[in-house]
Image (cartoon, rainbow, N blue to C red):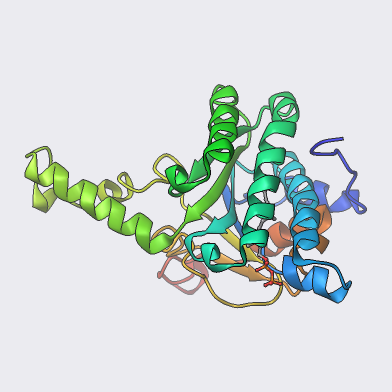
Length: 257
Ligand code: FPP
């Protein structure tokens, strides 16, 4: 079954989330550790990516259950092209299979698929399947599932700078009117709120060129769990941790003012 409705092992976690402080509107995830997961089992790295897709399904289901509005998954970075050819094609094949096989389930769950990154740089058949899934889910009103593909945060910012410069040259925009919301509207993530929570699995503590503009005030949550082992309960625990934090956005706590 696709995007399985696997029960969380601890149903109380979801109840606590839903009855607690505001949930993050947008959760972004750096899904790391597929390779190590496989290597520890004496399996090829590609087996780790396949197991990673199962984790994706669980987390997408969990995000929808928790009423998260948008979930962005760092699926393939511009730098990932430097990996062995076999590994790249395995990831592209998984993307292809998943976008094709999960269409029905995404429709049933009212999920809208979108993508961020240089999609035109993906292999043709993969790109076509992705675009078809994006088109077929475009009227869905539930969770927005955003796959960051062939993505680079710096490239996205440069792309936005060029778009803004063109608008200035065309006299559609005045230099003095370029403020943060105007600039953000030229990013590919236009329309999505900035991520409230960024989860990174496998213990690494870095951003890896992911959503550099958008994560200015994002809460970070790093877990040692490798991505294929990351399940619904892990996702719910990350949200509970977020709900326990005080977000000050550079200001002081109201209790101290
Ligand atoms: C990072 O682990 C993972 C990736 C670069 C690929 C993520 C891809 C998937 C989970 C599969 C496709 C997903 C979808 C949504 C269809 P790593 O290989 O860098 O792990 P390591 O650091 O242990 O080597």
